[in-house]
Amino acid sequence: MTAVLERACESEPPVGDAVEDIFRRADRLRRRRARTVILAGLVAVVIVILLGYALTTVLLPGPKPRSAAAVAVAQPRPSAVLDPVLAVLAPPVDAKAYRVVPSEPSSGPGWRQYTVTDRDGRPRGMIEVAVFDAPAGLCLPVLADPSACAQPDRTRAGIEYARYADTADVDWQVRQVIARRVVDGRTVAVQATGARGTGDTDRGSPPLTTREVAQAATNPRLIDAFGLGEHCNAPAPSCPILKIAVRPAG
Image (cartoon, rainbow, N blue to C red; front, side, top):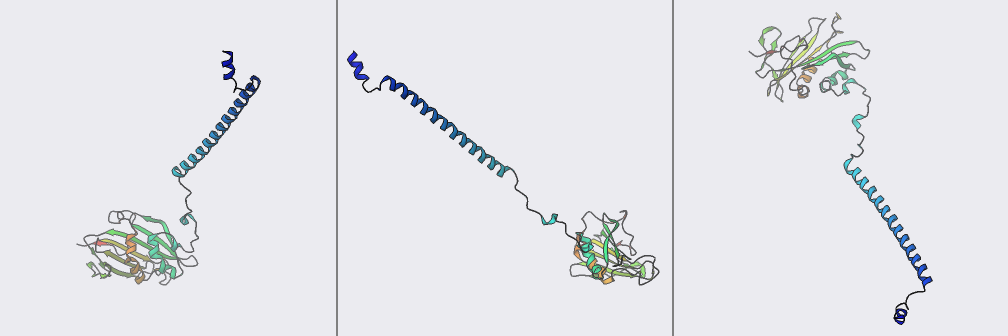
C-alpha cells in the first residue's frame, strides 16, 4: 500500500511548495475577481450614461430656434403695425407725410377708427370703418334725394360701391364710400372726416380724397380683415355714426 501511495504522489510538489502554491492560486483568483468586478462596474456606468443620453434625446425637446418674430423691430411709421385694416388705410396717409394711429376707443365688433395728424402733430381728422351683413342687397343713398337708391359702380372683383363727398359743412367735412361684395353681401363703409370745428375749409379737409377712400373700401383685404361674426347691423352698439347711413334694400 505504501508503494502505491508513493507512486500516486510522485507528481505532487513537496508539502511546503504545495502550501505556497495554494496561496499563489488564491491570490491570482482574487485579483481576477477584482478585475472582473471593476470591469463590470465600468460597463454598467457606460450603459447608464448611454441610456440617459438616449432618453434625454428622445423624450426631451431640443433647443428651440430663435424666432425672428420675437425680436423687437423699430417701426418707423404706425402703418407698419400688424393691423390688417390699418395696412389697407395707411399707404395714402403715409404718402402725405401724415401719421395715422388707432383712436381710443379704437375698435369694437364690426368697426375700427383711427386718428390722423400732420407732421407737426396737428389733427387732420379721422378715418372710420364699419362692416355690415347685407345678403339681400343695399339701397345706396342719393344725397340729393334720401328716398332714392343710387346705381352702384362695380369692380372686376364683384364689389358694388357708391362714393359720397359732403363738404358743405366746413366743421364736418366727410368723404365716404359704401361697398358691398355681391357674392356674400358683406358690406363695408369707409368714412374719412376732417378735423372738426376748424371753421376753415382747408384745415378741416378730410385726410383722404374720395378716390383714396374708394380704393380702400373696394380692396378685398379690407372686408377680409374683419371676422365673419363682426358686423354693425342694428342694433349693434358703439358703431361709428356715418354721415351717409347704410340702408338695406327694400
